[in-house]
Image (cartoon, rainbow, N blue to C red; front, side, top):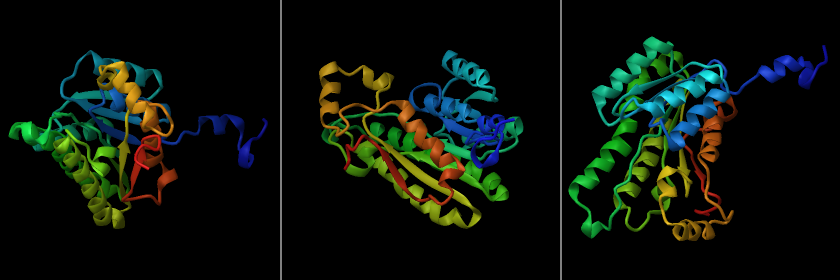
Length: 263
C-alpha cells in the first residue's frame, strides 16, 4: 500500500474530511447561501439539520442532496424568530442527531426603504428575524455546547452591517447588531471552548439578487475590486473554515467575503 503525506495510506487521506463526526445546525437553509452551506458541510462529512419557515420541496431537495453525499440530513419547519419555536427545533435536533457542534445563524430577510418612508413594522420585522433569531438559536444550543465543552457559532452579518447603506437602515442595524452579539458571545463562552464568529458577505449572486436588472448587477460588480459578485459557495467555504478545527484559535472575528468591496 503506497503512503502519502505523513506516511498515511492514500485511502485514509482521501477519507479525511474537515467536518467528519460533527453535526451542524443551519437556519434558513432551503435555498441561497444557507443551502450552499448545508451542502458544503455535507461534502466535508458533517451531518446537517436545517430549518426554513416551511418544509417544502426545496427542503426535500436539500435532504436528497445531503443523502447523496453519504451524510444524514434533515429539514425542519421552524420560525427562527420564535424563542419557543427555536427551543423546540433544537430539542428535536438533539433527539434526531444526538449532538450539535456547529450553529450557523443564517436566517434573514430584507425590507428596504428610505428611512423617511420606512414603517415601524418594517423595522420590527427585520429585527425580529435577522437579530432576535440569532439570540434564540444561540440560547437554545448553549446547554449542549457547554456540556460538550466545544462548539462553533457562526452568525451571518453583512458588509452593510460594517459600513451601512442608504435605504437599508433597518437591515444594516440588524447586521451590525449581530457583530456586537458575536463579539460578546465569544468573550462570554471562550472559557468553555465555544467559539463565535461572524461572516460579512458582500454582493452575493442568489435568487434574490438575480431578480435585479442586469445593469444594476453590473454596476455593483464594477465597484468590487475582484470585478464580480460572489457566489453562495464563496460564503460556504468560509463557514467550513470557521466550523472546522482549522479555526480553533479564531473567535470574536468578522470575516468579510466581499471581493475587496469593503476594503
